[in-house]
Amino acid sequence: MLGTLELPQVQDLTTSDLRAVAEHQAVGKDGSMLQNLGRAPTGVRVRGVATDTGAATLIEELKAQVRTGEPVAFVADITSDTSVEEVLVDDLQVRELAGRPGAFAYVLTLREFTEPVAPASTAALEADILGEADDLLGDLLDGLDITPPFATGLEAFVTPLTGLLERLRAFREATGG
View 1: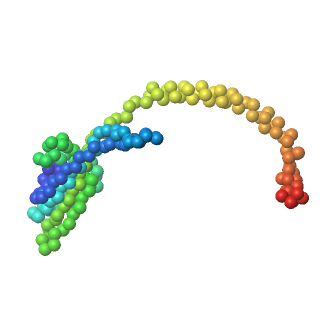
View 2 (view 1 turned 90 degrees about the vertical axis):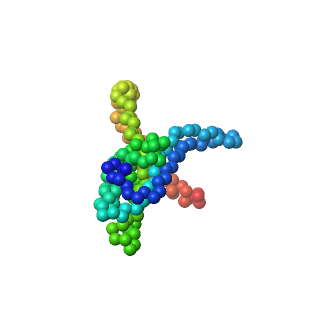
View 3 (view 1 turned 180 degrees about the vertical axis):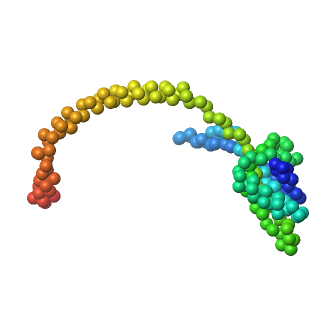
């Protein structure tokens, strides 16, 4: 059963369980360290045939499940040991059977759905960061008060440096450099 849909004539049901492992290599050392990151979501592949009068309706409902991307309940004998309760329809492949009008072969790829964990509250963190930023920027803004006298002090260098580039080019040409 996939939600309220009974999957007809299931011929093959396969589950796949993977462990997520990260490998860390130490610099200048032989070997590596493995870190267990838990298990990946269980995958389920269902292959079957729909041949009754409601086969076209079933295929359309399966396509709707793919489009919505919402988790749906899944019940099968083989998945009772893996504790898969809700799945997402990851892929649907449909093939109309030649010579049999209204008969469809289907392959469903399902992935175990786990409810995402709500992020931790950052309210206290944000208040501390805002206070520290205000302290740092307050000192910075006080230091910006000296910029007008500094900028006007640079005016004394404008006249002597005005023709510097032309004088350097002329010097380079005269010396052959």
